[in-house]
Amino acid sequence: DAPAALEAAHEDGRPNRSVLRMTRYPALRSFGLQSHLAPDGSPIHRIGPHRDLGSITLLFQDDQGGLQVQLEDGSWVDCPPVLNENGEAAAIVVNLGNLAQRWFNNTYRSSVHRVAANERSLSHDRYSLILFVNPNEEAEVAPLPSLVSEERPAAFAPVLVRKYMSCKFTQLFDPHAKEFKGKCIYDD
Image 1 (cartoon, rainbow, N blue to C red):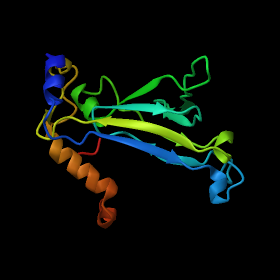
Image 2 (spheres, rainbow, N blue to C red):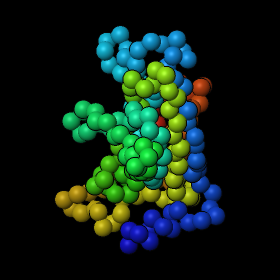
Image 3 (cartoon, one colour):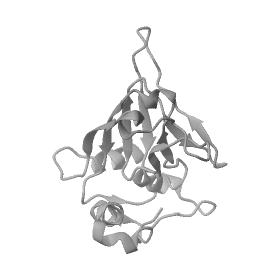
């Protein structure tokens, strides 16, 4: 069943590429900028549109704001921090990653998201704490049998997490692989 398969793929003590990262987006004025908008009037991107690679991502953001999610029609909506009675960020944003989308055979999608500058970005740093949860390196990811049918065939071939992540990490982070950007055999 689905819960057992997902749990086995995330078994404790097995090598994986899960990582906890703290990200600081410095105030725009520290770069000499006087506006949070680009010359064309669009917000400056603190990080451009992307999807996360793994299973799920847990995002703890401060009260700065700026997180946006792309809807299926291509438009962007703000995902403002939920604040408690003291005005402190008090919620966790959960994103599904590309590997989860593969398991769920496109029933649930990996969200395209970005961080856009806002008025507060001029004078305030933005901080986020991000936990990227990834399956074990030797786990195989394939659409769950319960989500595959004649009407809804498997959208993805099975893949080993190690191979998928290596290809994607090379595509994204290897400075010598620039000519391969956008050409991973596992592009989602």
